[in-house]
Length: 187
Image (cartoon, rainbow, N blue to C red; front, side, top):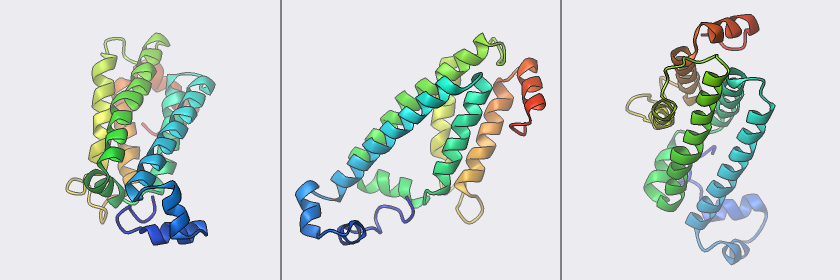
């Protein structure tokens, strides 16, 4: 997360773990196997956390706020090169990420939109499938160095603006009133 994937070697990993490289290779065939394992662990942990946040949130807006806080914290630790390295050098792990984004993240956002409509906080005429797909696909743009070069934009700031943009588009008057009264998000 901190240095990107390509710059970290098997020697670095073994040294950080306090084990020999031989021991590391006993459990992992290569760096690609480590990256894929870590991706699976990260996805599973994230999904458990998102489920917990959904269950503990008072409403859809609180849920969106909770999701965004978790993602902002996660993005603070991410080196922008990570996504590039993942896509270019670790196609199995990249595929896991893409599937996670297109299925899991999409499903969470779609459920949140349906919940918000049901609670009367989001516009009734929203198409949850389309809005959820738009949201999940915008995630790639956050890491696009041509659009948001690291020198001018932090990933965290770009995501924060994206979530505000998203909420402004889906909340209705009752939702705006809720945000104003609870001072949680600046919209």
